[in-house]
Image (tube, rainbow, N blue to C red; front, side):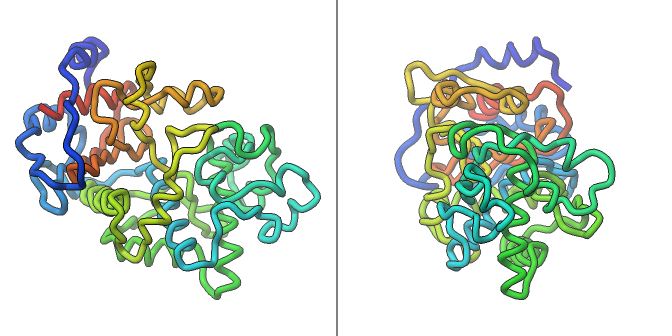
Amino acid sequence: MMNRRDWLRLAGGAGLTALGAGCGATDASARINFAEADRLGGDGYGIWHGRRLIGGRNLGQRLESFSITKSLAALAVVRATGEGWLELDRPLGEVIPEWRADPRKCLVTVRMLVNQTAGFSSGEAALYRGRIRDKGQAAVALPIIDPPGERFRYGPASSEILAEVLRRNLRRRGSSTEELLGELMRKIGISSPDWRKDETGKFYLSTGAQFSVADLGRLGQTVAQLACGTNAVGLKAEVFQDLAAPRPANPMVAAGIWWNRHAVKPAAFPIEPERHLDKVHPPSFWNLACLDNTIDPGWLAMVGSGGKRVYVLPSRNLVVARLGHSSSWNDGAFLRALIA
């Protein structure tokens, strides 16, 4: 594991220069520092240009992927929206009748749940501690703290409410969230042999999938296609791009992904997502935050605790997946070391 001095040494390296327009137009392998990739690659990593593996080790290594699960959940929302049985911006009172009498809860939408801006308390105690019989019922009963859509507040609450919204809609269609996720994963070409569940067997969407490095690479390849405007695995790119569009409460986070788009702003500053998850910042903070202000603003990251990551640079069709354990992971330092 690298110490703080090592990270600071890496942070002094030159930033990634701007890349040309277009998606996947040029070969990225000439820019990769494979020695640094191997040194920082944790328990396993992979680097792909399109679907071509250009570097990696331990691609079969499988670990709990934590909040990268949220990114897959967002793709399930893209699927449901594209099929027409879910709407991103329609208030959810019809799906959750328990909310109709609450003037704030009845304003919550699917987009707010995906983007963690619905206004609910984090819900960690109610949803993670002890034996949870029915996480969906526990989630929809959580208190709302902020006006919906106005503040980013990270935690399992929004994801598990989203899971309940999907469950109730799918029940009417004779299906389940688990079947939806299973079919989506098969189309992407990934699997999670184990998954965190409540006592009724319902999958958690805030955390709990266990993906291999190769799985994460395929997930990244799917997102790269969608980000470039190409439909993939039955998912509509226009729906994904709508869900991924920046919103005022936190334009850095959308569609279960952390975006580096603010790196182009003169006053932008880098943050480590994992160090800000327990903090509640005003929108002014998130409007300038980025992964790193010296690298290409096109980078995006699917983030799991402890340095579990999927990085995608759609303009180069470049995907980097990493599984490992780190208490002081630094996205910018890693990407600067990786790209020559």
